[in-house]
Length: 185
Image (cartoon, rainbow, N blue to C red; front, side, top):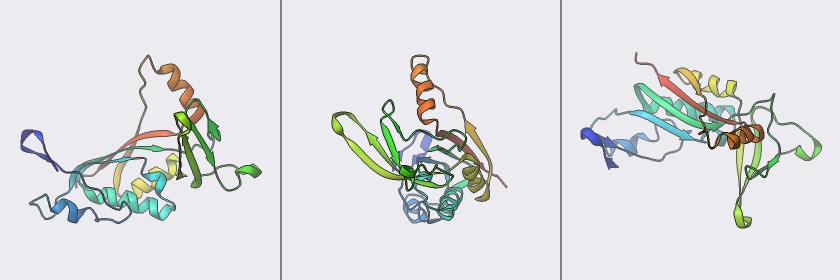
């Protein structure tokens, strides 16, 4: 909990993203309003942790339930494009992926579970599961949760970083930035 400007308060909490309303006891500790909700919910690379469509839908519904009417969800996530699947590895971006069937040439598909390994300097590596959902699947889950719209926001890269950005999109053009609004009525 942090004091906000203009008499407001910022409240940060962590909760199970698939359990609708699990954040409420945390939030109510800091709010005099029994049915308080948030103006903004953010999610950074949350959706790739939904291992099933049902879990993805639950995450979207929990985000929707957490918002006040007129509130917004802002996300960055990976997006799978079947027309332009990512390479299995990129030294430029420091990653490699594996999945069941990759060695046999089985292609990725919407909802594929991959093991994503990030490779850093000095031999540092970290591997974690990542489910690749397509934009249409993400949009359907968000709209199904009750959001009024889903707006994909184009990434912006500085002039100095444009060459890197072009290369990054060619290697791993899977990042998606999106904004969703909860209706007022």
